[in-house]
Image (cartoon, rainbow, N blue to C red; front, side, top):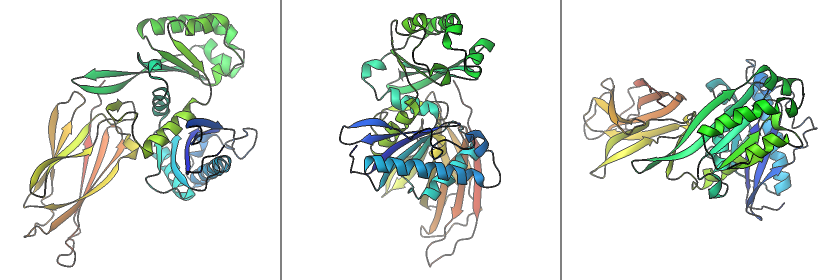
Length: 388
């Protein structure tokens, strides 16, 4: 495999196994990388859920080891020496786990702006909507089967008032028999009738163009015949275990050149449903400045801006709701001293602690050698109510 333009890689970190896919410039395609899963270099020696719950620093050490090994192997097979873009699909989308992974990424030396962390659903979205358009025209469904049961995600684009949204619907299904197939390795034949009843009811209400089956429960040489026939009735169906790594690779490509969802807002579970804007004056012209776009991955939002203020005591943020209504959030900055001659300079950092928690930090920056900073720092937390 010859690439020569730098590494673009998607990495899927599962609980016990890590997988990878790379963009091959020669064939203009995304290809899986054989990480020799019987090698201890690529098998998580400690389950991922145990690694990220550690509090003695070993979490970042273990994650760093995994990432270094995977990236080194991907560079070897693609004959590259530079990392252009890395995207990691991660199953645990909460702050402590994500911060541990972020620290591991920092330790690998990957530059800021060249990496991102996405959820499994994000990865599925990038994968399924990167395929032929007819495979997503009526929506797509992910059916993931593991030891806890069956988790279904349906994605579909809906246009409202000339705005296109990618919407998500989740459905869970399980039973003792369904779980035992994975836990006791009894085979899908033992639950074929139950699987058929479930998917018949599921697709009766949710037509899709394509369904993607993955997970330990579907990791079999072939599906039971009745179930297999049902899956390809009125839709395309695909079975595989590398969907998330390939989806992450498509997302890594998008990080370099956004195209796939350029005009679509991704209102998925880990995406911010509210937008944040403010009115500014630039070169004497009044403008609306967008700070956070609806549909942005909440964990990847970390933006710092600097402003020179007129004589104001309040900063007003305009919040856009999912149904395109607006309301204002005022932040009192009267503690920051006003200085004449447009010499009051502040920085404002906006990041998120969850999909519905926005953290704002405003600092007095002073004005060069003329005025020292007062040291004043103002914090504000916004809570958004997520709506279906």
